[in-house]
Length: 410
Image (cartoon, rainbow, N blue to C red):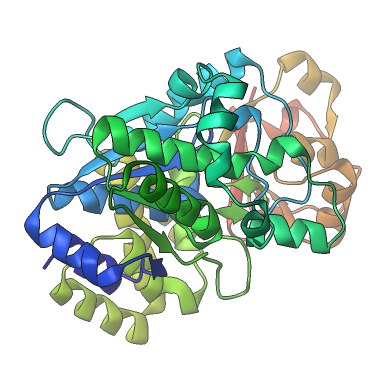
């Protein structure tokens, strides 16, 4: 099987600029392909995971991945799917985020100097050296404003009569130039991205053809939502980060463990690298024991991201907490100053500070709805004071419903 064939088989495929020619090229030579990430956060999240898995698949088939970090384009902001302009980030914040993103990617792909080792490049290295007049003279004439206005990322903003700055309008040009630069300097054949990037990717393919006459390709994935329509990679409490500094391996495991029933088989194909025989067995498990299938999905996904020992520990904690009713030592932990405990803390404040509620009002509603527990006992009074008498064992467990727990230590 080729990379492209497995790409389709797993469910990654959405569009390709020249599918038959790309398949032929892969048979004749190894592909160099790039995927870009703007550095807006210190970690990638599950919403980026399909793209990360594609880079991993590319490398497994002996092709070379290029990870492009948008040190320059982060300062502009891609208008695709956005309601408003991106907030300004300092150079220091961008540099910090780049380190975090490489940490996310290093869990899944190998960086190095080998033929199929991934390399990371920063478009700041070339875009910030290009003079404005030079860019207009050499590249500006290659782009049609008429064509750019038909691109979904631009068209949707204009149809909604939402402001689209000239800064954002230029993003498409710069992304196309990135592809041209990588094709010229690294012989990069292909750009990968989500289906919302199709217009930007095609613009790059056309720019390469017009300027150098070289052949290049664009390959996109479908935009993914859960069966209920939620955006992939988001939860009630926020993004599901890949780096443990932003999200514990236990919480990562729990995200996958709580997958909606209709998504379990699909996510197994997208994120778990099962063999054909393993998928047959897994699908049988989905039909006959959905909870065991979810545990398997959660374990394998966590193992890929955080390693076997962290996956083992997350699974053991989940079993102790949910099946045996014990306090798991891998649960999220917050610490409270002993002087505050001596005075006592209203329980609604404690649930808010633990992250189990988004606000103090939300915390009160949780308690009124009988969803709040302390040490597995339902909290009846939203003004209950939590003091030293609660901490006989040195720790208490706060719970929101059946699935979210936090340990509180003094």
